[in-house]
Image (tube, rainbow, N blue to C red; front, side):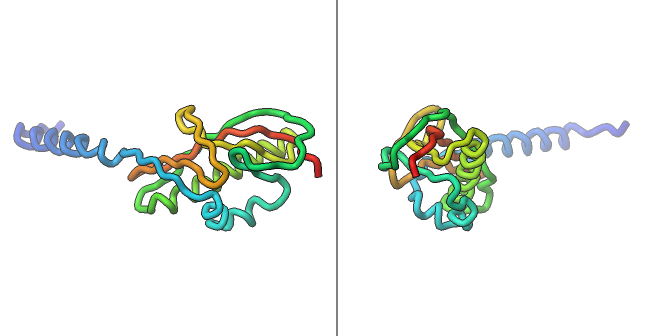
Length: 152
């Protein structure tokens, strides 16, 4: 086994300490409010979601709710490294919406209503905006909503 001299060992420890000291700044978490319409226009979101399941944010008016099947939530993160907050947040928005859509189809719902941002279990309700937490490394979106059958 090769022995490391004490100077090299101290330099290695100093390097590890300096790198560890930089981690909290990279892990910063900035709350970003972005328009739902902008996220639906990005990444072919509207096309990818299609028309099979309708989505209503906040207290948006809906057709008559015939049956509430379930309330559920989603919480997703995406790689934010080297991306603008808007780009990474719009991407994770689409991922969260696709997850809501998949769950709606599983339970036989044709809509998800009362969708609110629910990051760290703190609700933020808006018809036009969603909350995203963006950092240098990760960006995250959390939604909660009611899966329902709407009158057509």
